[in-house]
Length: 620
Image 1 (cartoon, helix red, strand yellow):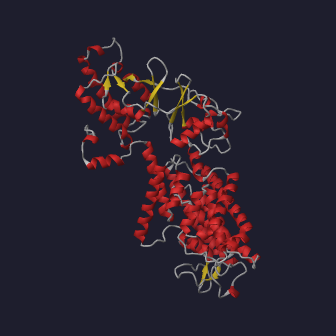
Image 2: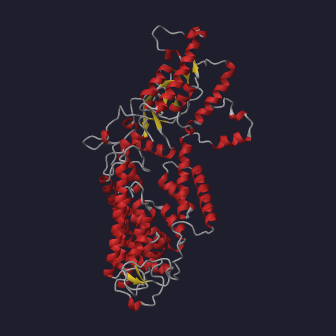
């Protein structure tokens, strides 16, 4: 049970400290998620700054300086902890040996610039092809609710994939896939599979079944060493390492495998497969160029890095964060221009083929999330707030009857209710659904004039308890389900209903002490009890005039992390409310639109219709 004593008066240092770190609202939860995403990626790639940039660019729809510091602190602690546990500074998936010991790197970059540009564009196309192929595979796989079929799909896909890799590795011997093991390779790297001679390894089998970290390490380092037995190399072998045919088969097979495995019940990952595909393709291009242009300064490792980065850019559509992650993770600051070139070209090419990255595609496919892009769509620039707002608004008065509040909680899913003046529609404030539930649960009932029914000496104590419980509402589980009353019959809803109704009945039994609160015969019992929102509502809610540009409303949502925005007329009367869903509906029916959120709001001409009966509260 909640302690009725106010934490601010307890004088306990521990309680005061705990009060500072409590998650008090949606913004705190959102910031923790942003920090967690940043810390996870930073630990995975050994890139603390890259983790912060990735969270800002991909994982967060709202950003501030406070979020930046929190994410930076989390990423630094995550990387430091991992480094201490492993006893080395070389951590992360991209911590490979240095392969940039070339005295004329800038000259080599200029000489290779046209070929690197083509490689980056082709790798970006591979990333866009992955996103498209992944969506097509998603239409064929069983529904997420069919758990048995999902498990069977996982088992069959795994078995088929392993069998196909074994068959391809066996066939590699026919195109010269059995090669002499390079002296620079570690003893435990490389496998002799279906190779006739002792000391030979099957390069395609090694690419498929060796540790992915070691495979990428060998791909990035290919071509750096000299070959002692060059006379024994095949025509398709590249500098004692991999054959061109094996690199081509590995790249295409891995691309198809990761496109299907990304949607399995146990996903196969995205980052490392993308790097694997891109590095194989980049090394293949670099090897072909080195054979065609033997006197040109071709650095295959440069092409492998550009290919891996470009595929990541084509899949995720990240820009600055991807550059920082790759440079930090590989410790190859000398290749920063190549990385930037790969990111820019891959994003440009992939955006023209398939405009959405993998995360945006998942949100569109989900169909239950109103995701706002960082920039408003073109149609919003020619529309006003009045055209996109929801016009049927559920409002409350500053002193509202319990009977009407119970009806609103039961039959709506609104997260916030505009508070209007008693005689007009003038906006006075905003009260949240969670605050109403807390007040009902705490039995903070009053009379028609707003005077609390509790004793005068208990008024301050009750208000402190209410304020604290409202701030910590989102930390509670079970009973405190935000939409429990508006969902289907459930145990949580029955518990809330029972507790609140018991409180109302007890308060009604005490009404005999207040003759002035007696009502007419046949009046619902809840109509004689009221809640006073004055001390608890937001008295200065953000609002816009109905003539305001819809693009500006979109900017307010993304810049301030809003969930609802009141729309008023010249007299400050409430005429509508804008939510994320309204903005998502109004964004149009472009070819990128996949989900069902916009299905009912588009007419035959492709323009959004006014949603007079839109559900205001179903927002992210």
